[in-house]
Image (cartoon, rainbow, N blue to C red; front, side):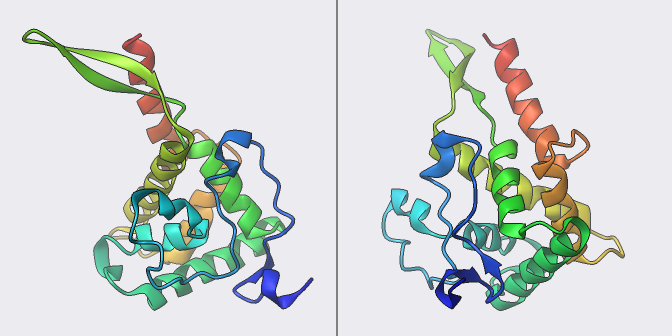
Length: 187
């Protein structure tokens, strides 16, 4: 293993397997976890940012970690260590599986016919699936660590492991299933 292919100088990112071929293009696995906003110019270049950095950026948006990227990177790094201790797997693979599992495949849009609003079920684009998945995972971590004595890195590990194994008790998976259930009702 070369040092250039390791995230946090520890986790190999070259041998990660994807179960969902549609999202493979939008889940970038780069050993660089801090690009300093190089891809912020255009809307669709966010897919070129490492999925780990996207998770860090999403975790950094709310709560006590607002704007504190190094602190949030440390939280994710500690969460990855916890994942490796518990499962023995590569935490990057666990993150990829969690992102693939937590993204909704179908959601609703509201169409207006005259003065009537009608919900309609639509398929979700792969890039939006990845975006929604990261949003659901970060929201689950935030809600799981809010006003609790638990360490936030343990919550990160719990949520990623649960989402990767498609545990229906996981908040991100529950949110995904709720979105899909509403879409199924709107068919």
